[in-house]
Amino acid sequence: MTHAVDELISLLDLETIEVNLFRGNSPDESRQRVFGGQVAGQALVAAARTVDTPGRMVHSLHAYFLRPGDPEHPILYEVDRLRDGRSFTTRRVVAIQHGRAIFNLQASFHTDEPGLDHQIQMPDGLPDPESLPDFKTRMEPFREQLGDWYDRPRPIDVRYVGSDPVSRRGETADSQWVWLRADGPLPDDPVLHKCILTYASDMTLLDTTLLPFGLSWENPNLQMASLDHAMWFHRPFRADEWLLYDQTALSSSSARGLAGGAIFTRDGTLAVSVVQEGLTRLTDGG
Image 1 (cartoon, one colour):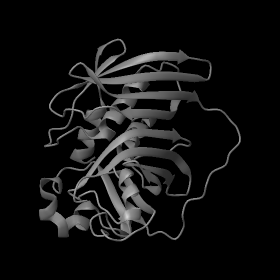
Image 2: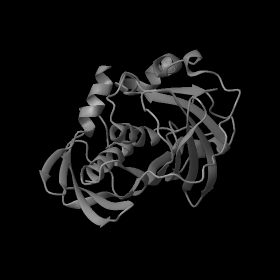
Image 3: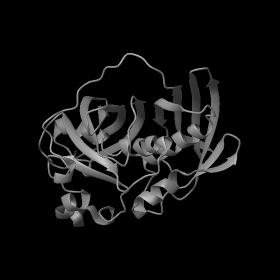
């Protein structure tokens, strides 16, 4: 296990304060705000900690990012046990900092049962992840431009199929493909694997909304922030094995961009669907 993955597991291991109340911290990094995937992953951990039915796993979540998180202070997660049914369990989680809600999540948990089975197909003809450069190799030409962000520990190994967000500036498209996995082996805990993928799912999806315009997230005249995030967990997967994140720009209007993603296991099984809307505001000069 790499040190960065070990730290991510610790980041998701919330402290229990009281019944239905948990506390999470942020990594010791120079960030202006808490990474959205961190809050979503920690909130899902808090929700799962209150589900008592054995084998009942999260099948969907819907979340809103309300305010930027302060990385210098802990985050409290308050869980509301909305429903405990025979097949489904529903939880609502509010993340609180400085006395105000910064994020809320509603998650539904389901006991697996047999039923109809259908899925979209994984794109074919894409290169294997091992043939693609990792982040540091890919971004080496932009090291000075990226500053200390280049050297930041990365628990998720992300490998772009085709060009990366910086070098493709000026090129237009409506989709991108990314291979990703935890950068080290994980314990055999399916809850942890889903929480880590929730963390990772926020890493590249909103960038997809810039592709039709040939823009990149490092444009100084562009403001970006996640607004809401939804995930549906269809089939089992391991977050420490390669997953293909097939991402499409769906719509951009009113300074908001919407993107959809399908996450496949390497053998072509559709594991997760994701949709995210975010702020994509161009300031003067953009």
